[in-house]
Image (cartoon, rainbow, N blue to C red; front, side, top):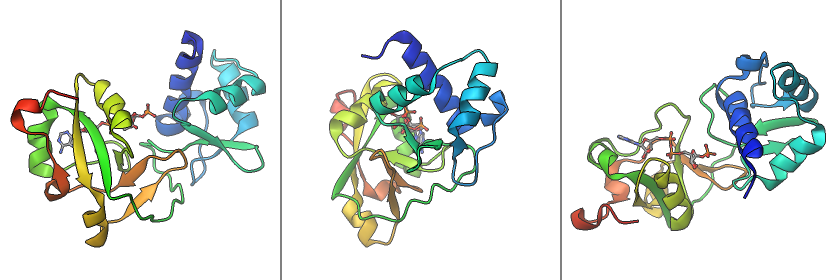
Length: 189
Ligand code: HQG
């Protein structure tokens, strides 16, 4: 388990690299990258001083590999989850037959109606396995796992991307492709 200060820093980095780079005076490039030097300087100026080694450790030890360095190690970006406009440059990919989405019971009626929508983020996030989806759902309460017929979506021409850290991304998942848990098991993981 990462310690509290690592978790706090990881959350702050998510905020800066996905949502509010201007909070510490940074600008992301069109693909979401920022120079590591600039990031370290900006963090130090805004009460989050860390060394390059600490940053590298955080990136490498992150449970979900949320952040990635460029090949030359000079730039860093979040691998998914942005609300600011970026083009991560992922190419369309063929998904596994099934993907999973963890949510909570109170959102299910609306998802039944409108399918999965991306909301503030650029994409709907889907997981490769049930355990990951359960963790995503548990952030909001007791996870309800939706099973997505990704093979049929793909066959029908809907586009998928996979992020550098293995999150499957889609623009919208219409409800016809979603298998919902039966009513009396909706509260079960
Ligand atoms: C729900 C975290 C009502 C959806 C996680 C979810 C993930 C609807 C919420 C990543 C809906 C959106 C993404 C509809 C979708 N009506 N509710 N039609 N369609 N929803 O946080 O997938 O730690 O934007 O079920 O682990 O929960 O940040 O998406 O509950 O990988 O790296 O609307 O964020 O990763 O919430 O989470 P989010 P998410 P990090």
